[in-house]
Image 1 (cartoon, protein in one colour):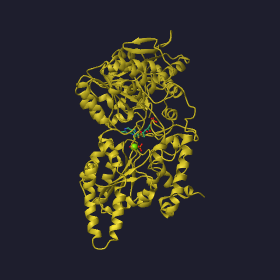
Image 2 (tube, helix red, strand yellow):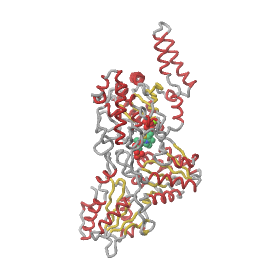
Image 3 (spheres, protein in one colour):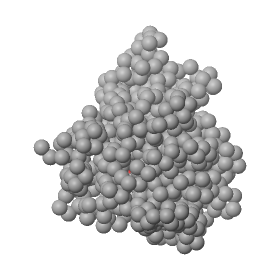
Image 4 (spheres, helix red, strand yellow):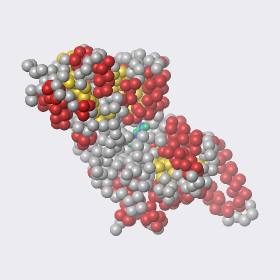
Length: 640
Ligand SMILES: Cc1ncc(C[n+]2csc(CCOP(=O)(O)OP(=O)(O)O)c2C)c(N)n1
Ligand SMILES: CC(=O)[C@@H](O)[C@H](O)COP(=O)(O)O
Ligand SMILES: [Mg+2]
């Protein structure tokens, strides 16, 4: 049996002789490289914290001492050391989650993959320990240098620093990267601290030497210790953390397991809040990851182990790429258009805009709230900013969209990639919230393209709006085939009209990529003699009132969207018709308002009934009932 196979729990790890730990670390690395080469996953972040995770589980007693991972994408070694060794179906249905999962293990606490939250959890847990009289327990939060650029982290640090005798260990996992090199003053500060490795080691050497020196040793060490802060302040930038009132240990070599254990034991026994600043390398131990300029194998797909080359995958045009090229074209036409990323330059495709217009790209770090309000400031001062974020991360800056961009009627455009079901990154990554939460934002205009051509057109229309925020949302992955309109209904695209001789039985409002599905449904139902009209609204907020008369001509209206059902476009259509006394029954189809387990996108769409087969079946029943005049209250909620 290998050491790896014997790691069923942290107790087994604690029993391991120290000289076996490098062997275990290598076995873990070999396992992660091999398994991620098959499934893809967050290999780079996890390779970077193998020694750190080993040291954490040897020094602390999880789960009594919770070990929290910010964002959670770097927790693969943690999963291995807590007994989870089958990564076969990582991030797929029935396989391990790509993040900590409370259902998987008592050692897991934070499941969502939204960055910069771990310190707040830790502060709360430490306060709970204090209130419950469990102050002998530790709470440990591992946060990356990227996540530390998020505002929540500083709200937490402010609170953590407020109580000097509340046990809490913050491990800053500083690899200098988010995807790209981490930006900003904080990153520069951390980099300066990295430049002076060994202060702790130098001090320890002095301490050990002086402690053996009778009489003068200890006082001299204390003087040296006091001097250390002075030296650090003098030779290196202001010790920001210590000036916050937090004990700072570091920088520590994050791949020197014994040094890590020593620092973590000191931190554990300190009896108050401590920052342990750990220097790691993302992708450590796997050369293709270490040398990967773009993001050090942050989240690769399947790859060849020998070369690190991505395995042949779909060469189809991706939504992100269409957005990227459109932005470059717009940038050439509009000098006032600038772009903002929240530490996701390449994942959002803005790297092409950055290459073309290096003075008009702004990476704000993992700081979506700042991005939205800084963009509002830019708009107030004559620019038209385009903020590109993943749809799920727009949640982070809802108030800024509402009370900064919209309240001030500023022309800011938000482009939301990964909108709708993303699937394998689990519940916190599905972009299923935006078309619900944004419905309440006065003046905001929201568009959902069905294909590449509509994306190009809608982004251009969005950046032309100067008196309100605009949003264009599109899914992960490959764009579908172009779906040309056959006509227009107001400003909306007509995609199918009930065939000649057919009654107008059903109007389907197909939102975004669901317009393609709606057309397949129409074609299936036409074969059964049911007349179906399909409309793509393009702009789903505000809805074009031409929809009212169109709906009134049909027996049933259905709305299909890749968004949560609650408060989505379906509800907006129903409200529009009600408000205009059009009493045609409306059926809404979307994602059930639940946190969805990780699985592939297509699997989830199948589970949610958002397939042509299932929709045709349901709508055929509905139309036939309404054609005969019978109504069935149970049908009030088709997706129930
Ligand atoms: C609120 C939020 N915005 C963006 C992301 C996307 N994201 C995932 S990991 C990551 C970089 C994290 O960098 P860091 O915290 O330094 O961790 P590392 O990957 O370097 O270990 C980003 C931007 C996110 N998960 N959450
Ligand atoms: C953890 C995180 O938020 C990102 O790394 C995310 O997992 C990437 O998602 P994509 O693979 O869809 O770019
Ligand atoms: Mg980092």
